Length: 232
Image (cartoon, one colour):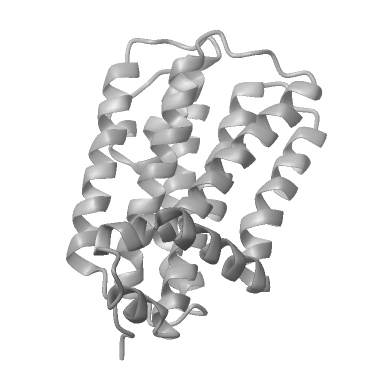
């Protein structure tokens, strides 16, 4: 059932030119521009690539596509079928999540070809990518509760997107890790990426815990604010 829903959602995603360009083109374009700029600090570049990908491909696309499905009453029709609510939501999120993970591999490959070193510790990188995708999915579902139309998603997704980006920039430009950095969405992601490329590992456990906390917060908000029928 999840596989069938995912195939249908993938088809619908490709039909929406705005959502498709946001999910497919924007992250890769930004990633290519960052690599072409000839970075001297690969950790900064790779972390920024991944955060932009999570923001555009996962977070914004999840919000926009779910609102579009709700507005078309597609969600309401799915809910009257055999699949349970969690199965329906999972099936709709799988394509975007897999796309984000695939783009992470492509972006890392682009950086590697351009001269970036391999990570010294792959595990923090995996935690950042997978955990970041889960967080952005959960917050994206929650954001639909405040978004009445797909066009409005460009506005409603802005606060979290900039918090994600700003939170990632904070530890990347700072000389040392401040625990307050882990309180913002992108802070834990940047700390994990820095640790993967030879950075300090003192706060890896706290960064992973902070990321897990953001995932839990996102899930809680999604349960509270997600709506199956169009918002008036």
